[in-house]
View 1 (cartoon, one colour):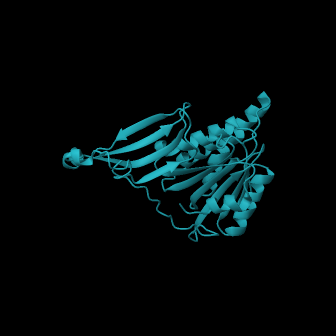
View 2 (tube, helix red, strand yellow):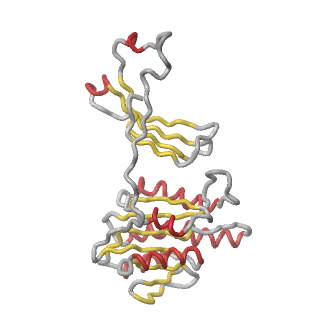
View 3 (cartoon, helix red, strand yellow):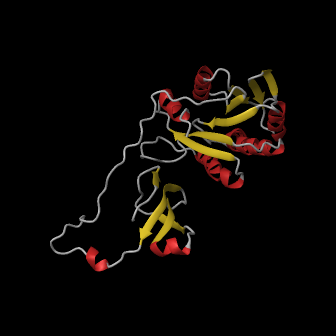
Length: 277
């Protein structure tokens, strides 16, 4: 390329993959000199693992001057230089306005509870906890709720918080070893994990919430990355897949999908978690 703006790679290049190249529409004058493209690389299952934005190709004038001669090295016209990114803070934190809140959904799971407790310690005035169980909606305090699996539970939750600005939603229900070893486990998993995301989205629409919401969907081993995973959880992958398409449907919901394995430390998760971007 002549240059490119950004490149994102979530895992090593597989042996076989597909390239999806979309040409950007520019003015005729600019396009005559430089053509711009956005490129996505997908594995054979259609999972996108790399993106390159603003990939530019420039027209070459007098190409004979650029042909490599016998006495020139192969890299005479090409150099590779890394640009160091600014260091991430050791303990990054999110900034909330006085009437702005983070809502976190979770199950009765030890790893999820540990994350919730850390978030409550860091943002004691700005976290609303929502535990998903087999019961019905129950408000225990102004910042702690229990809800069931039904859409009306989620609708009622957001309706009870009318006037409260929820700027960030953290969905932790798929941060678990979701083993589907029976039809009952599959049904429960769909209700608690996948259906929960549908219900949250629909509740936002049903309560006419139009301001921007950042949603963070956290999963455990939803995909194979380095081959050292003991198990990959199919339902967690479905949850992450739902998150990938959400912003395309609803422009006010911005999604960040974070997949961790069971070996990662709590402090490492929180460092990623608390980075504003």
